[in-house]
Length: 64
Image 1 (spheres, one colour):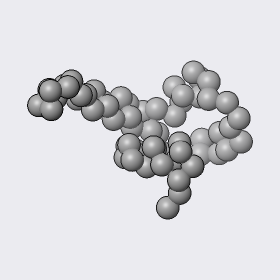
Image 2 (image 1 turned 135 degrees about the horizontal axis):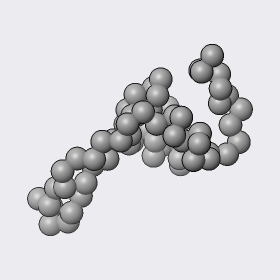
Image 3 (image 1 turned 180 degrees about the horizontal axis):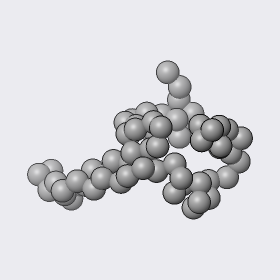
């Protein structure tokens, strides 16, 4: 079962990351604010695209 392959993950290695990421979408740059901003979406296998705000909250220890 692929779902259980990385349940006890201690380190994110390039191999693990390659297995987990399905696709990376790079959007056109936006310069309307005077600064160049570019949106990047990462589609994870079995999960899909997670909102950047959720990833930021998880990184900072904030939970819903």
